[in-house]
Image (cartoon, helix red, strand yellow):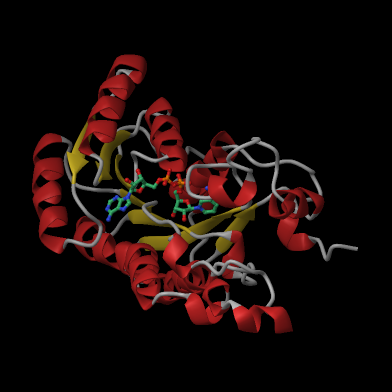
Length: 279
Ligand code: NAD
């Protein structure tokens, strides 16, 4: 069976970031035209240039926010004009906020003296920010870009979830709940679109060392792993962090016709983390 990826048009949100910039390159390497969306215009404009030079396939970088429907609609007009109708959407923009991160894993009696470090010190502003970016930031781009797929009865959407969507990690209550909502929405939309030729799936990456989690996993001063970083490696049977490149096989599989009968699933790419009980 052909993968059927060549000359398709993919929109990638959060394409200025660590994971999605690599995803965009792996799509370009397969001959997919890429529209790179990020609030960081500089990052996606540079990436688009790099992709066109290296892979000789069209790519454009566009400044838009996944939380601003008008900016996405404006981006869609440019994409349709320059690249054509959209076939694929990768909802990659996402992340955590320190405002919705507790300072301690588990509350103990002595924390009553310093509630700021516990659940009681978490800021609603942080919850709003994290839910907006991860959950609404998946829904809005889908509303805007899936219409092209519905019109031609063909397309594939891949959401970016996380390990903590299955079972929450300590400290990051908002991010865990927001990614759980991404999984739930992935299933809901897969059913909703199932008779319209549009598939909806998600990738749940395991632990990668990137800008969004570096402050939790490595000591800023020494560069040594924090106790949390050590715990992660000990609970990952492959005993290492993953790399963004290791997500590309699953991404290409979910977009291509190789997964033509697959919709509504979340695939862990995690070095065995979600399979391991810790014993
Ligand atoms: P990153 O911070 O490197 O990239 C995120 C990108 O999203 C940035 O370029 C940022 O400018 C952009 N962005 C932020 N707000 C935006 C908005 N409103 N509109 C458009 N773009 C916006 O993060 P990353 O590590 O590459 O993560 C990418 C995705 O993978 C996220 O959804 C993240 O939650 C998920 N994820 C990451 C890990 C990890 O270990 N890094 C693990 C599991 C899941």
